[in-house]
Length: 71
Image 1 (tube, rainbow, N blue to C red):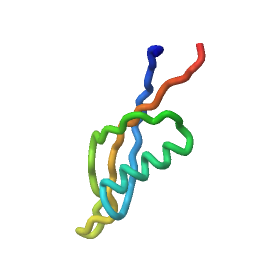
Image 2 (image 1 turned 135 degrees about the horizontal axis):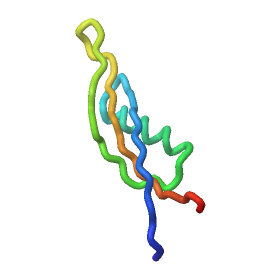
Image 3 (image 1 turned 60 degrees about the vertical axis):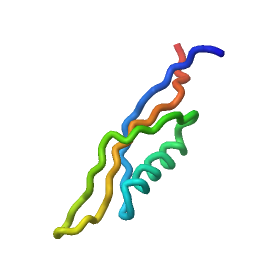
Image 4 (image 1 turned 120 degrees about the vertical axis):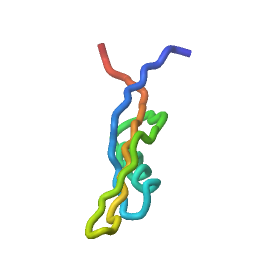
């Protein structure tokens, strides 16, 4: 087994339903252009409020994937 290196990026997913859906949306979108996704860590949760009502949930996600950069 060879040593591996992982890169971590930060994403913000949004949803009008829940923080869980917001995180899921971020991961699903990232999976369309990144390979070997490994770990997702939730670093922050917040909400967008308009006229005293929650209109969107936002989840900040730290996502790691296997780094395959060349020399």
